Image (cartoon, rainbow over all chains, first blue to last red; front, side):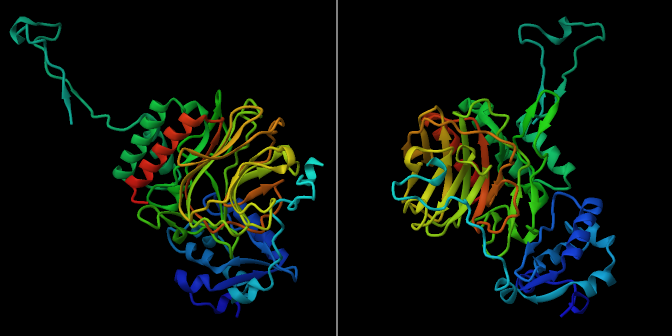
Length: 120
Length: 307
């Protein structure tokens, strides 16, 4: 399904079961749009998928309505362009496409001497 | 409640005449709130947030408790994560400043949290993270304003904290051991089979940083504190859980502190904690007494908000 086919507004429970998937080009335009019309109160920060596309949780759509943290960005957005550029997928399907998380710390193991690698 | 300034009882009104004639009682506006609490409320409103009088009262009592504890100057940044909405929650109570300038972000930058992730009061009160979706706060503040790599603290109040998965609740890292500062929930498979809670403030001999295998889902207040070149302590509610020695100073660098994850050299965040965070702080190191007083104030504040 494309975003243009999704009925808005959307409730939080439904939104959390969905993910927005889009290209790196769309992500770049989103970042520029956020600089121009967004605020630090809500910065959409997409995550990379294994196929090179990016995703956001659809719960971000709960902030595009009047008074929402993304209302200003949404008001200035090209809804038609976004509507056909963003795919809406079940979040569990997208979760399977997520890049594996980097270990929190690169030095995640302790060697035989009990010394962390950065201390060797 | 208004106060009146009355003439001393030994004198009668008719015996006192000033330039403007008989004295008149002067009413003074009530000042029930701490100045820093009022400043915070003003900054919340400038951030398009709102705060109730009840919350402002609780924040005011917290400020008074911190002042009375003598630890205000140790706080580089502190956010009680309260207020009526997410915009309010993002406004720290205490900010780092140098003369004529703010250090770090005026508010915490919100990456992917939505309003439904935040509830101010009650058992579910706080900002709830996610393990399924990347959600974190960027404080925009580094530890560089601290004077010494031997005096630093991190603290967090959180619920839904695990001891069996590997996540970091607050931290910063410049890819070098001495530059690591974090509090984490870790599993038994990593970090030398610890599992539970740990604090890492710099590098430790033999990699044995302070950790505890005791873990609780609800952590009213965890503090990790270094006060000297050789002692680092992990405390729960002001009580020491673990203490380890290191002769290696913590290095303060230009990587800002993140909450709900570790800021690892400003790389893209790929995993975040689903903890429900009710507040965080970082600043100079705290001793045992200071830590206990700090935790008492944090716990009392969250109790006032029913969380």
